[in-house]
Length: 145
Length: 145
DNA sequence: TCAAATACGCCTTTTTCAGGCGTATATGGT
DNA sequence: ACCATATACGCCTGAAAAAGGCGTATTTGA
Image (cartoon, rainbow over all chains, first blue to last red; front, side, top):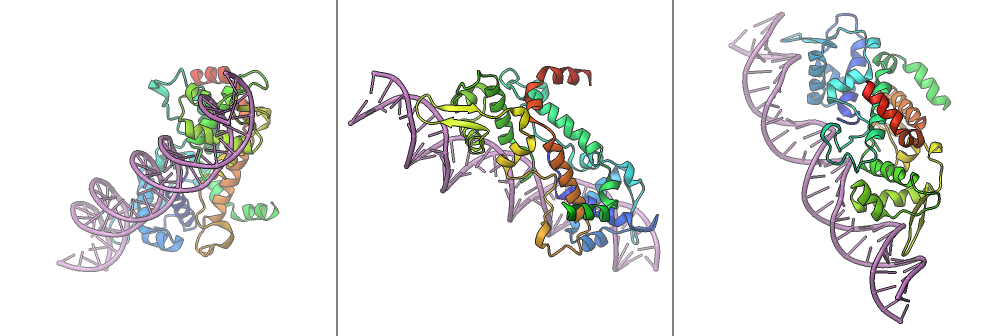
């Protein structure tokens, strides 16, 4: 409902690792958790969420695991955040939108809406592809800054 | 250290109210809290923070209060968020940057950096002026969407 | 039949958020 | 001089959210 948190980080780490595998090669939650140093349960949960939303395909049973089925350059950070967190908003706008008894007193309702919309657009235009694939270029830019 | 929260909302509401006053006219924390329906203490605290950072000027004593001293179109959401929250990051990047003992295992370090940098730029380019002054235009756009 | 994997609900602990309380200080009015 | 009304600010507690461990069911290959 709000900011990007550890779940999203675990998801990103998992996706990055899977993107480096050969096409169709399965990766287990255990391997991902161990490789990235993330807690197993939390990692498994985000993998399940991503499988539900068809970003991954899961295979049960022994020798099961997960495999990427979507091109990450076609998946936005907004989509990932929404499927993991439910929604992403810069601010909560506690006086919530529809039936707000404070609507007349609250002079910030619209500004918060503007902001949330802007942030949604912002996340919509960031693809997981650019976030996960361009490590070297990004590193270079960081050093320069 | 993370997302925009109520403190930022209270600050925005207070700024909007003060921006509507005549230049130099003082506004008390009490008036702001009552007008916006925000808790007094929380409101007073963000006013004090903004005064410390010279966005407002405060006057003590009876008939004291706060007055805007900066043009809101020259204040970015990033600046406001940073002075109230300390910093704003899309994700925490728990394996924190400098001395990270997991840096070799963590394959997400750089992507989170990219994201945080992007979000910082995003907030830097939103001015409080555009957020608070353009209610009507914003409302119109909302209805259309 | 068993081992290893996904799937998922429940629960506790930890952390963060929110905000009230008390008190010090400043200042104008009476 | 005194008091009412401000700002300034540290401390503390209760509520909410995040994090993640545990137990268990289910699937599937050996």
